[in-house]
Image (cartoon, rainbow, N blue to C red; front, top):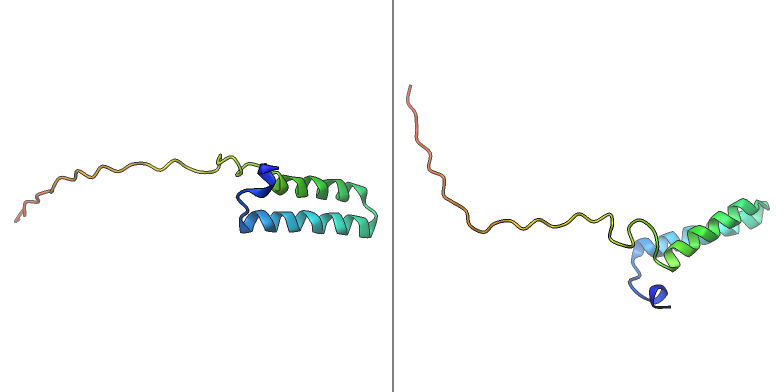
Length: 78
């Protein structure tokens, strides 16, 4: 129940609405494969499962060093 109630984002709502639309369309055209696929696509945002729900798509932030050395340039005349 905690997975259903927590961390709803705009993309998660869009995915849920798309899954419901697939289910409705499947019922409308009597294609039960679409209804099953829509059920799968509806359950994924409900339980927040998928590739990006676990943070697998995130890249780790690299820490940059705050110690910077001043670079001195020498002018070369030809």
